[in-house]
Amino acid sequence: MDEVVKASDYRATQRKIVELPSGFKFEIRKMSPMIFAEVYGVTNVSPDMTNEAAEKLIQENVFSMIETVIPYCVVRPKIIAGESTNEDALSIYDIDPDDIFVLLEEITNFSGLGDADSAERKKFRTEPDGPGSGSD
Image (cartoon, rainbow, N blue to C red):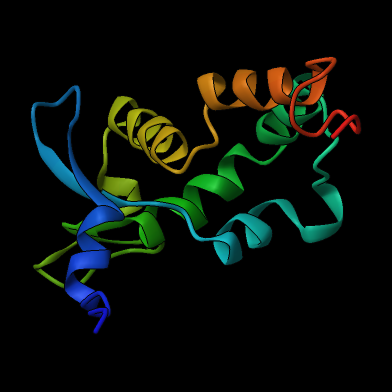
């Protein structure tokens, strides 16, 4: 009989620890499709989107990304988008800007949405006889 994965085992594959410029370590998780859609808007994203168009979309939405993605994708310590009155939670406004941008980059890359992944998707779409070329 095939054993079904435990939630904790699956969850562990979706998380990792990152060290920030400040020297502190945070635990992050991959960005879910729901968070991605919330940040970019479902109508703004297309599988045929060029890297330039995706980069422009990110630049236009960077502050929205920070306010949505960082609190959702940072598992520990707990981060909230507003002011924090909880001793065990950080306000997004308390975090050093260098740490914020490294967190955003780490989350994006870990979620398969970084530059290297984008280059692979572009290569996949443009290989003449490769998968997705229509010649299969």
